[in-house]
Length: 67
Image (cartoon, rainbow, N blue to C red; front, side, top):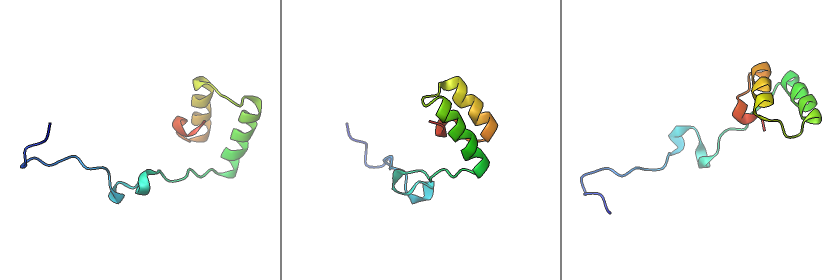
C-alpha cells in the first residue's frame, strides 16, 4: 500500500545521526579496562549475562559492548 502524496515517508538515518555508514564508533578501552577484560576472558571465553553485567559495572563499559 502506498502513502498518499501529502504524507512524508520514513527515511533511513543519515550522517547527522552520528552513525555514518550505519556503523557505530569503535569502542576504545583504557589500559586498566583492557587488562581486566583480558583476564576475565582468559578464564571464561564465553561469559554469560551475569558476568558481562559484572564486568560492565567494574569497567563502566556498556554490557552490550562486552562480548
